[in-house]
Image 1 (cartoon, rainbow, N blue to C red):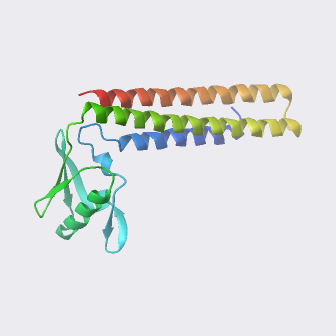
Image 2: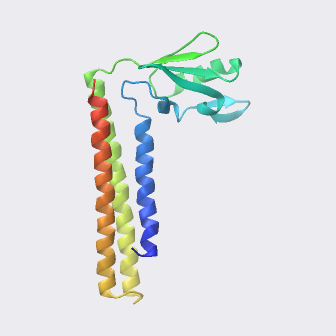
Image 3: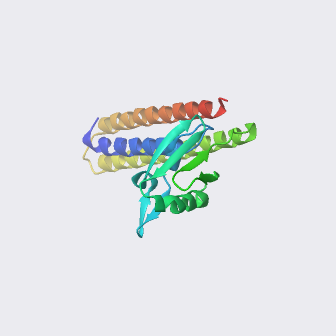
Length: 184
């Protein structure tokens, strides 16, 4: 694979990594500390990630315990969780916050699977757009006589193989996350 194609492979890899990050924040009925990854708390006037101001642990299969480093942050963390789109109500005893994940209904599971598939399709579209950009670059190089027609065809074949590989990774991620969500 030529050096130029490495740039496009890196972009495809980043798209898949972003999808994996999105999937960790989708809750599947079990307590997963990663659902809190996108929550920020106002810490002395600066937005800080929840992980940087508190200890987050799983106490039971469906309960997360958030223990702030400073007791004064309990209210801030509680407020940040309430305004997030998690749909969870925090319970606090003044020192720690408990988040209990309700059992998902069949209907909610199906909605989550639709969301998983939608995010997966968006990732595949991004990968195909990267393929288009790579093919355009190769065609420009051929028009400028920088590479031969045979090299162009070889490059386009390599680009397609790369695209197919990443699209199949995304398909596997969609299947795995869908099974995880549908498992009761």
